[in-house]
Image 1: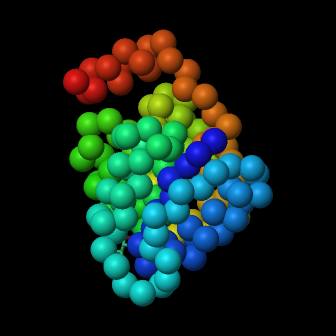
Image 2: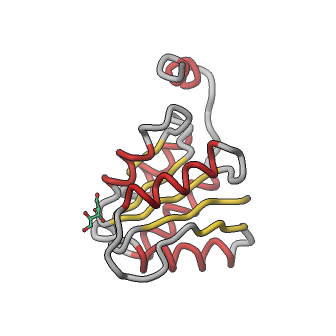
Length: 142
Ligand code: RB5
Protein backbone atom coordinates (compact mmCIF):
# COMPACT_ATOMS: atom_id res chain seq x y z
CA UNK A 1 0.00 0.00 0.00
CA UNK A 2 1.17 3.55 -0.66
CA UNK A 3 0.93 5.85 2.36
CA UNK A 4 1.57 9.54 2.88
CA UNK A 5 3.45 10.36 6.05
CA UNK A 6 3.88 13.75 7.74
CA UNK A 7 4.98 15.22 11.04
CA UNK A 8 5.89 18.47 12.70
CA UNK A 9 8.91 18.80 15.00
CA UNK A 10 6.93 17.24 17.87
CA UNK A 11 6.25 14.14 15.80
CA UNK A 12 9.43 13.95 13.76
CA UNK A 13 11.17 11.12 15.65
CA UNK A 14 8.03 8.99 15.88
CA UNK A 15 7.39 9.54 12.16
CA UNK A 16 10.86 8.19 11.42
CA UNK A 17 10.16 5.08 13.51
CA UNK A 18 6.80 4.56 11.81
CA UNK A 19 8.42 5.01 8.40
CA UNK A 20 10.96 2.27 9.18
CA UNK A 21 8.23 -0.11 10.28
CA UNK A 22 6.13 0.61 7.19
CA UNK A 23 9.05 0.06 4.83
CA UNK A 24 9.99 -3.15 6.66
CA UNK A 25 6.40 -4.36 6.17
CA UNK A 26 6.68 -3.73 2.40
CA UNK A 27 4.62 -0.54 2.14
CA UNK A 28 5.51 2.39 -0.07
CA UNK A 29 5.95 5.66 1.84
CA UNK A 30 5.58 9.20 0.53
CA UNK A 31 7.18 11.20 3.35
CA UNK A 32 6.31 14.89 2.98
CA UNK A 33 8.34 15.97 6.03
CA UNK A 34 9.35 17.49 8.27
CA UNK A 35 12.87 16.16 8.05
CA UNK A 36 14.46 17.43 11.27
CA UNK A 37 13.44 18.33 14.84
CA UNK A 38 13.59 22.04 13.98
CA UNK A 39 10.36 23.89 14.83
CA UNK A 40 7.80 23.99 12.00
CA UNK A 41 4.03 24.53 11.65
CA UNK A 42 1.88 21.38 11.63
CA UNK A 43 -0.78 22.74 9.18
CA UNK A 44 1.80 22.93 6.38
CA UNK A 45 2.60 19.24 6.69
CA UNK A 46 -0.94 18.02 7.34
CA UNK A 47 -2.18 19.76 4.20
CA UNK A 48 0.66 18.34 2.08
CA UNK A 49 -0.02 14.77 3.18
CA UNK A 50 -3.81 14.85 2.86
CA UNK A 51 -3.52 16.39 -0.62
CA UNK A 52 -1.93 13.10 -1.67
CA UNK A 53 -4.91 11.13 -0.35
CA UNK A 54 -7.41 13.50 -1.96
CA UNK A 55 -5.77 13.32 -5.41
CA UNK A 56 -5.25 9.55 -5.17
CA UNK A 57 -1.45 9.48 -5.10
CA UNK A 58 -1.70 7.72 -1.72
CA UNK A 59 -4.41 5.49 -0.29
CA UNK A 60 -4.08 6.60 3.33
CA UNK A 61 -2.04 9.04 5.41
CA UNK A 62 -0.47 9.04 8.85
CA UNK A 63 0.15 12.38 10.58
CA UNK A 64 2.19 12.83 13.75
CA UNK A 65 2.50 15.89 15.97
CA UNK A 66 2.88 16.37 19.72
CA UNK A 67 -0.68 15.37 20.56
CA UNK A 68 -2.20 14.43 17.19
CA UNK A 69 -4.80 17.14 17.80
CA UNK A 70 -3.53 19.87 15.50
CA UNK A 71 -2.96 17.42 12.66
CA UNK A 72 -6.50 16.03 13.04
CA UNK A 73 -8.11 19.48 13.12
CA UNK A 74 -6.34 20.53 9.92
CA UNK A 75 -6.92 17.25 8.08
CA UNK A 76 -10.64 17.24 8.89
CA UNK A 77 -11.14 20.63 7.24
CA UNK A 78 -10.97 18.73 3.94
CA UNK A 79 -14.35 17.23 2.97
CA UNK A 80 -12.79 14.03 1.59
CA UNK A 81 -10.84 13.34 4.75
CA UNK A 82 -11.89 11.37 7.81
CA UNK A 83 -8.98 11.84 10.21
CA UNK A 84 -8.96 10.02 13.54
CA UNK A 85 -6.75 10.98 16.46
CA UNK A 86 -6.22 7.60 18.12
CA UNK A 87 -4.51 6.54 21.32
CA UNK A 88 -4.38 2.76 21.34
CA UNK A 89 -4.92 -0.29 19.14
CA UNK A 90 -8.65 -0.34 19.94
CA UNK A 91 -9.35 3.22 18.81
CA UNK A 92 -7.14 2.68 15.76
CA UNK A 93 -9.11 -0.43 14.79
CA UNK A 94 -12.48 1.21 15.37
CA UNK A 95 -11.51 4.25 13.32
CA UNK A 96 -11.17 1.96 10.30
CA UNK A 97 -14.01 -0.47 11.04
CA UNK A 98 -16.71 2.09 11.92
CA UNK A 99 -15.45 5.44 10.59
CA UNK A 100 -13.49 4.36 7.49
CA UNK A 101 -10.77 6.78 8.59
CA UNK A 102 -8.40 7.56 5.77
CA UNK A 103 -6.00 9.50 7.98
CA UNK A 104 -4.52 8.33 11.28
CA UNK A 105 -3.27 11.06 13.63
CA UNK A 106 -0.86 10.21 16.42
CA UNK A 107 0.55 12.18 19.35
CA UNK A 108 4.24 11.53 19.91
CA UNK A 109 4.00 13.09 23.38
CA UNK A 110 1.04 10.90 24.28
CA UNK A 111 1.92 7.38 23.13
CA UNK A 112 5.19 5.48 23.03
CA UNK A 113 6.86 4.15 19.89
CA UNK A 114 5.91 0.52 20.44
CA UNK A 115 2.24 1.43 20.90
CA UNK A 116 2.29 3.67 17.82
CA UNK A 117 3.86 1.03 15.58
CA UNK A 118 1.31 -1.55 16.74
CA UNK A 119 -1.53 0.94 16.18
CA UNK A 120 -0.36 1.55 12.62
CA UNK A 121 -0.17 -2.22 12.00
CA UNK A 122 -3.71 -2.73 13.31
CA UNK A 123 -5.06 0.34 11.47
CA UNK A 124 -3.74 -0.90 8.12
CA UNK A 125 -4.97 -4.44 8.70
CA UNK A 126 -8.56 -3.46 9.56
CA UNK A 127 -11.15 -3.12 6.77
CA UNK A 128 -14.17 -0.81 6.86
CA UNK A 129 -17.26 -2.70 7.97
CA UNK A 130 -19.67 -0.80 5.68
CA UNK A 131 -23.42 -1.30 6.19
CA UNK A 132 -24.91 1.03 8.80
CA UNK A 133 -21.54 2.75 9.14
CA UNK A 134 -21.58 3.72 5.47
CA UNK A 135 -25.04 5.24 5.95
CA UNK A 136 -23.72 7.34 8.83
CA UNK A 137 -20.66 8.50 6.89
CA UNK A 138 -22.88 9.46 3.94
CA UNK A 139 -24.72 11.88 6.24
CA UNK A 140 -21.68 14.13 6.55
CA UNK A 141 -19.97 13.53 3.23
CA UNK A 142 -21.83 15.85 0.84
C1 RB5 B 1 4.04 21.72 18.86
O1 RB5 B 1 4.66 22.14 20.02
C2 RB5 B 1 2.65 21.17 19.17
O2 RB5 B 1 1.79 22.22 19.44
C3 RB5 B 1 2.16 20.33 18.02
O3 RB5 B 1 3.06 19.30 17.79
C4 RB5 B 1 0.82 19.65 18.20
O4 RB5 B 1 0.76 18.97 19.41
C5 RB5 B 1 -0.36 20.49 17.97
O5 RB5 B 1 -1.50 20.01 18.02
